[in-house]
Image 1: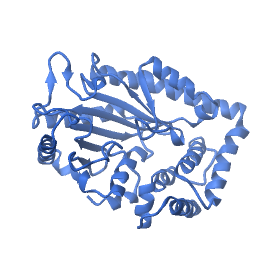
Image 2 (image 1 turned 45 degrees about the vertical axis):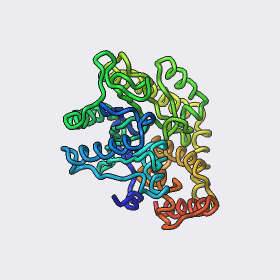
Image 3 (image 1 turned 180 degrees about the vertical axis):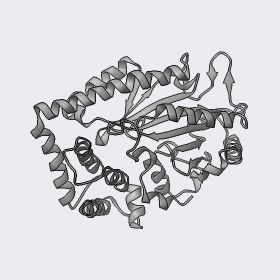
Image 4 (image 1 turned 135 degrees about the horizontal axis):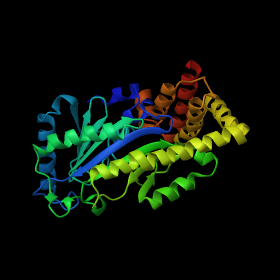
Length: 353
């Protein structure tokens, strides 16, 4: 797979399309599966891990998904290529840490809506990503993929507990439903804690844009279910579709409306100050860029700034990430060089908008 070509376009999670995409950036459904007869990854010997990888790779590529999937051997990837896959949400940060005794790979769909990690925390981590609020569509797609895989692979399953997984919170259906939400108004009005309290009450996890252990930079929050044991897939999905996501969308919409009515100067100052900095700065950190782009995105979705398209913003979200930036520039750069190149790239792109 030519990873360099990935820098030419935004990933599925940043396409900026789909229902309610002004707030719901992306929808994701993930399944954890393990092969019967093998220990979990953290308990398996090197030989067993290699067998799991080879067997899974063969069945994934030879199955009905073969024409849509391309295999990437993580162990053979350069560190920058691994980081590129992380930035595009195709693999986790944990999966990028391959070693000689832990062979890892990922099968990626040509449109990047599907990825299947092999030998992450579980033998298989199947993921479907959709832009905007498309949990139902993502579930239907992953359910089909799961059915295809289960015809070719024998998964570890207990009649009492359901699918067996390395982490106890995934036992049962093995499903993790999540949405990436852009919540700048709640952050700006100091009401983001309302979301966190509501999430805690509903036993949900609130994380940053790169999942567990990451910060919510750019006002992007990943909200997901924490447990699956004792709950059906449809029940978990319905909670998100009809309760969790609509409630958070309502909170953000109310905060945006309140800013327009009560604090329009604060709203516009954040938008236009961000625009000025991005168009004039000579050195830019990644986290700084994401925070400023968040304000610009808010301005575009609210019709208060028309100087840039959502497509351009989405591209900048990715192009300014460390691996994407270096791939785009065609050279390895130290942090200082990246800060300068990032600022130059932004000025150039926004000047063309």
